[in-house]
Length: 204
Image 1: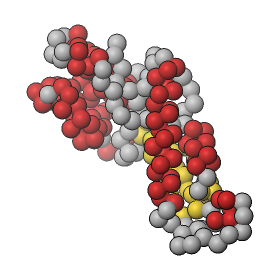
Image 2: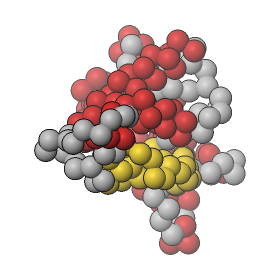
Image 3: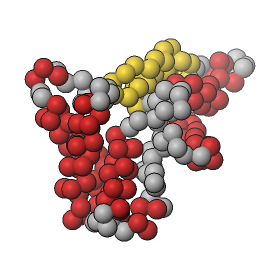
């Protein structure tokens, strides 16, 4: 099966490639934000993370499974899926912390990982399983459709996201939770002295 996103079946080399790109991009992001802040200025970040475990279950993984099913049914050309990857990486709390400390511009005030539902924790009593999974599928369609449509064509989009909804329903029927870790990070920009180890005054 061709994976479009990191899963527990990917080889270590794939993890390392994704991690290196995340480290480069996140470090550049932090450097750019630090240039916009005065010393003592704060920044608050939140983004999807992952647990430090071999098992990885994400909506993107379910999308990949749906695409593979459609290849087997000759609804999608296998060659189009073979070299397609979602340009995303969800770091562990430890990986995010390591980049922040290595980049050096910020002090970590708080770094937490909390579970957040794929449906943004809407009131489950208000929706049945079908409606809840349809809500999730539509949300991720808004996020991913432009990229997937450019690769696989517009004609399969309705069928693809219907299959995604059905896989979400199957997860609920098995008693699995539709949620992922979410990293919440509070940072404060270091003073010039803290960042460079001397008492020079920063010129703003």
